[in-house]
Length: 111
Length: 111
Image 1 (cartoon, each protein chain N blue to C red):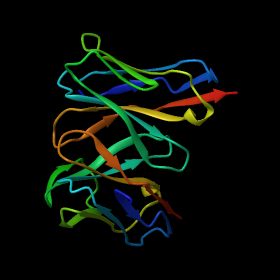
Image 2: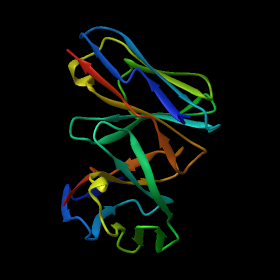
Image 3: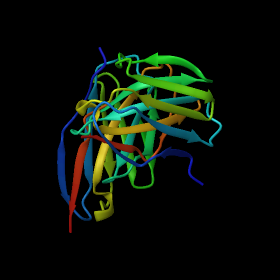
Image 4: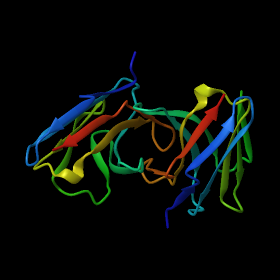
């Protein structure tokens, strides 16, 4: 049973396109996150949702829009993709402030 | 400010102990974590320590926390080739569970 699952695992797309990454957790956690890992492996938080409510938006361009239809799902929609958006995007969840469990990541390549 | 620093590389021989070090700046950290990332994979939570503890041991892993110096270390006893990965130190400063990550230490284990 996968605790935090993301789809797709790989995404290759052209500049200017709009794409979505989906995330689901079956841990019953209230808090979900999106993190971005760049080519130097540096990880930085993008968004955090608690019970479908946005609580952290870490100065991410507004081309990125998270959506949480229920507390088990947090999707990430990206408009007008740019070359610099190429990265690995990780979804995570936690019971609250504390240990976070991560998905396997979505490697986004913008060409 | 929020900053977590790690050295980038560590190389050890199989069977030796590995010590990965981390320093952080935010004294309001509540929890400190160690995550492991194998190539092409997500982040696996290895262990964590609450900020009022000095030490935590979990099988081959020992975490030491020096809160005065804001220094965290992870010792892996009897390091195996399967331990080769990138190890991330992270702190939680209780703003909705946000994690601040270090740059990651790439551990290379030679037979």
